[in-house]
Length: 478
Image (cartoon, rainbow, N blue to C red; front, top):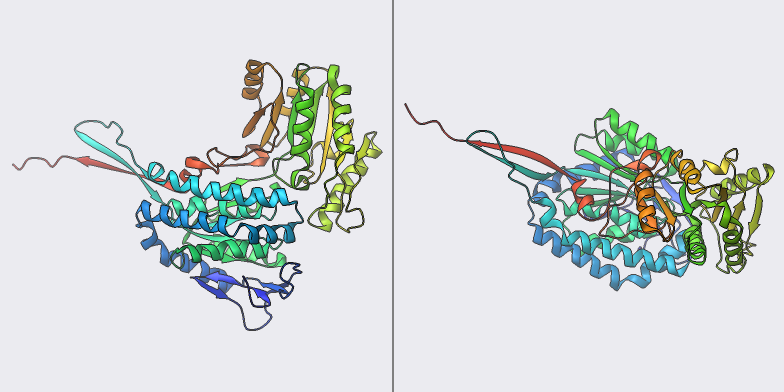
């Protein structure tokens, strides 16, 4: 735990705090009242973090996979042992329920363990056929230094996901934590040190919001940085990708979603209502995969809406968002929908007096003219749209610029498979909620939801490059 009044950076295994108040950013912590700020990076510190990783890369890239696996499993063990402490930090920083904090630790530990288990297979090369009397060897090699930019909303899952496949593949990593979850992200970075990872394999930086462009640009332009991964909003993702493109650096982007559910006339409506409510309101709807729009066939729309509203009005979980800006965005979206004819349903909120409270909300009668139809809400809000047919709902889904997660509810699995093939998204969940991820599965989107894949062997391959070696025979001496 941090014993100083400021959360430090970690560079080459050491906590870094500037002696003056330069770049300090104020915070309030219930779990650690002595903490008053975190240390924001300067350009010089950001470069130091990159160069530390660069110095550690030659040795780490040659570390045998079994040793990398051992260290990763040490890390997973520490996560489980310190689960209670980590969960307290998460609840303090992002105002989530105990369930979400628990899931963060459990899923994150699973990601670490699964990644450790597939290292050897992922880094193995191949011997494809080649012309003539030659042998072609295709090797897999790590890239170098990778910058991982993690968000606040699932701080343990997404914080570790940004660096675990990176170091497992033999790269070194910089974890750029979020200013909204600095304690949790620092705690994770410090665990790598405790687990026995060598100095410089994982460094940790934070920055003040106003310094974001400066710090990112000095790191992505550094020749030692070979790739960046970013999880966050589509708007910021565009900036990340464009700046990286100017430096000819690849990026992996997992961005926002307007995650649709299509409910057919033969669906189990009880099951559909349960899954929609669960995926709409988990972590106060602040998950990239949260359900945003429900397209339901007209013949069952009234019944499904009734079942959803029954569950809404029995919703007793407290709901609040992470910031005043998020609350203002949600209010604008709901009021715009109301002004254009939608019916707004809201649950009683036990946190009604909290300045960041926002009630679980259903917008009935969403139309394409409403801002909510195209803008990701990222809060405890979803909308319902009645459609004439499954085909109409499918066509509306296909017009979305986003493509992260979706769901189809029907008893006809063959029809669901056909619809899945026609939806441009990273994942389709048949008779399940849009919020679902497992360490063994690829995760990512298309379109405005980004590109590239985290998860399992797919995640490791994102941070490996191929090199082809052709063996030719020596000509006989004349």
